[in-house]
Length: 79
Image (cartoon, rainbow, N blue to C red; front, side, top):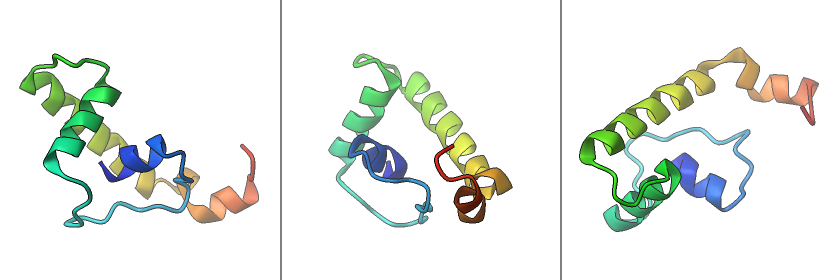
């Protein structure tokens, strides 16, 4: 939710890091945003669960990647 809400507001995500345990928004807002990005308003819990697990996995890998680090971004600004 932290990434998706910032992405929707068109915020720069280059220096943002997920903060575990940090609560933002309500459960209703989170579910609405997840369904919006999933692209299905009638999604099953299984589809929603798979989407969130996939998204969490990808974003975790991205945060740990040297190619997505702030230092790399400074070297390759605009790419």
